[in-house]
Image (tube, rainbow, N blue to C red; front, side, top):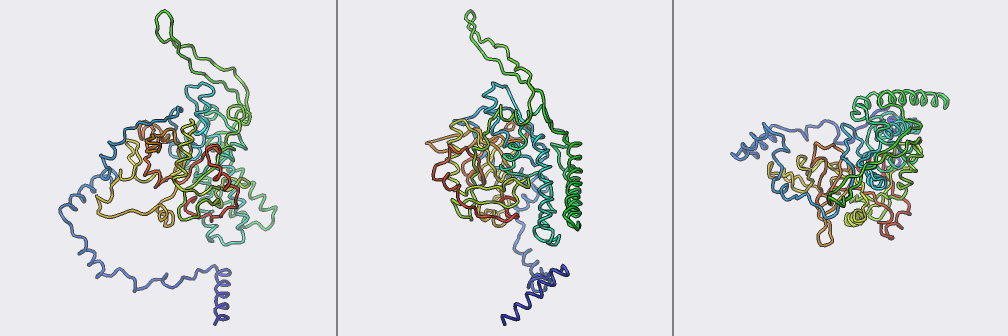
Length: 481
């Protein structure tokens, strides 16, 4: 019996490999046994009786968005928007219609220190500059992965994932760290956003087509030299599109900045007198020299921590393919409890250090008032259905995962415990409270998945755990896909 089974499996493998034929498992093919019969439909009709209350809901849903009907006004009114600790930062940034939240949040983490150190009224680093290099690095990474997967069929799970997202926008903290260390930084007015930088849909579609043609050329190449030629021709086309859409990144630039004026009391009038602002000398920088002068090397001091229930706690987890370069590291983080996460975030903010974090921003939010809170959107009362899934099950069944990165810039503490957090978002000043948001403690625990903290705010016992060998997740893991 065992020999027959082995022979059968071998024949199946040969058939799939040679003919590219998919063999459905039992129950996959059409079957009358599982059909939606008239009897089942009739029982469903009888189970859902249209009461006057349901008719009222039906009428309301016919004329209104669902979220407009489920917002809990009482929950919203309880948010007093006051915080016992806040960090001064610059004006709200706007990623517009792009998936660059990870990049905006990464640069916004260090922005307050630069503003404070150089006494600036406002300051913003160029996201478009790093966006350019991210796209080029990402193209190179994808082409190298295409080489590695050349012997697999195009519709294998890995190749399908690669072809679906050959050069998208999303990213994580390790992307920021890699890009800054390799390419440095420039101020935003040196390389500002273009229309395409903030509205990436059409540009990404064109880039994706170029990338898929490049993958095809690599797969069809008969020699290593031909593969190299296909790769370089594809990268040249990607570079040209990026230059046209985003502008070419500067090798060097001249720049100066304006320090805000100070206030002093006039001895005769006892009134505050604004002292004149100062202008710094005009200097020539390279992106690397600018980075080193204005920031030193702070990114090396940060560590990623995640809350991934269902995976072993206090274990390093690595996410395959979660990088934007061929030679940069995959995203790694220590999996910890949400309570440990809160303590480190609190310690950072109390020492005037902003905290980068990633969450599922799509749930339980009031966009008008800038509030994320459990129950602020009450779907159960409207539909009479319980939509709850635990954080672990949301990840396991693809119902929730980290999809947006922001920055904690304040916290409200009562009896030594954080009860809510002030959030600097990158959705512009037309959403939330002029761009600022509040996250409550229950929402944090249910929907925050990753934070970034300076090593000095991490307990020694957690730091020691970061030295262990990682548990490696597949490229399609919901946490990073």
